[in-house]
Image (tube, rainbow, N blue to C red; front, side, top):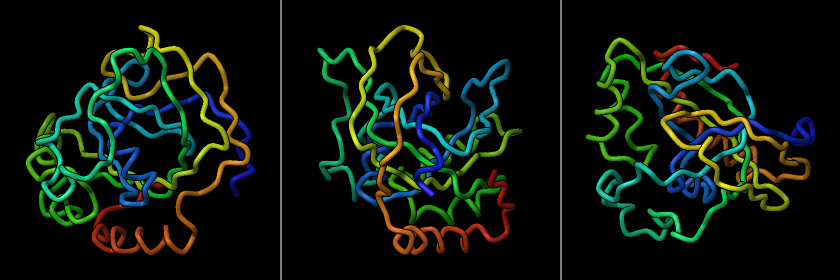
Length: 199
């Protein structure tokens, strides 16, 4: 239920283009390897709910499939005079998988907007670690909340704890239950040989 969570101060840094694609209902998954959390550099999802923190640092047009390169998904660069982080969405994790082979990686290609080369490069980086794939149910906040962009937010970290809790009560799902399950089912089927580690 949406009203279980009333506020949140934990945010996951994710490409702004990916957040926008999810907000439009075009994608429901993220992939990640690495990302500093506490004292190590392994990426772990340890919270089932979190805000989405749009980032721009590593976005590049040529890392997106040609079919979406010309879509007006989102600006690839932050406005030079924008010194705030704008929060519009929080998410709930429904599924978590660890991918360890290239065949499984290829199976999820139809369900995301990144190029095969980019996802493969993430997969091969630190080969001893699996690639984490998570399905996220997105909720649009009732009101956008902005916080100042501070040096504490910079760097290659995945998780950010905000000084203030952002209200999420009243947020509405981007996709209905039926729409979400329609998108999630083929991904789950493609990953049927991988263990679902959902929290």
